[in-house]
Amino acid sequence: MKRLAMVGALLCVSCGTGAPEGNASNVATVEEPAQPNSFWLAATDGPNVRGTIYRADNPKAIILLFHQAGSGRGEYATIAPRLVAAGYSALAIDQRAGGGLFGKNETAALITPPAGNAARPEGQEYLAAKPDLQGAIEWARRENLPIILWGSSYSASLVFPVAAENPGSIKAVLAFSPGEYFADKQYVENAAAKVNVPVFITSSPAAGEVAAARAIADKVPGGKATLYTPVDGVHGSSTLIAARDPKGAEANWRAVLAFLKTVAG
Image (cartoon, rainbow, N blue to C red; front, side, top):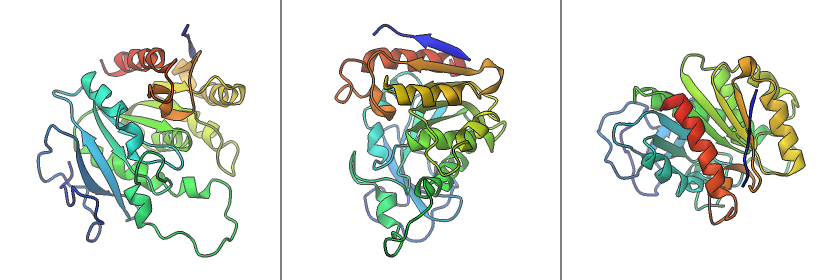
């Protein structure tokens, strides 16, 4: 495991905010414009998932951006344009496990919550979003570009089993504050042991987050994990948002872009 020390597409069936009519298709039928474009794609178990594509000119790869709990694709409103400027196209989606932390999550708004207050297994809501991530991969395959997975908090954990289940299709993985957020407390570590591509793992500087990130990084085989522990940082992908991490965002961006350059140019 490498460790860094730091001092400091699819047819647009709806480009508005209304719900789609029927399930979206994962077949690209029109050319997307250069400006961010929102559309519906299909999760692999059927439901519709709202996404926004940010396109770079002559992209080196497409990065699939997955958000944290209580959040939505708006988590990447400032992050995705910077990735585009660095030469990467990016797709940010609203997973069904999310909320309004960064604006409305249109996918979650379509999902009927379970009736009553019956207890559910730990992390079940997060695991339910896994087909949303896979649906994004199926959509991205049609771009004919290297696919990079990027997760934040619970989705930083889900990207490991998803990457492991798509051998040969994923170029690299970035995980911001992953942890064992599920009932099976070895679920993520066991998946990380099957990931055979370069992985960038980071967290906030909090001791618990650092330990969780290190435990997962240690499981990635072949020395392909880069563990980055920031001097200043916050939970999840917000560590790259200056408004949420004014002291650390720029240093953390440098680490991320350096990693991306090693895997995709």
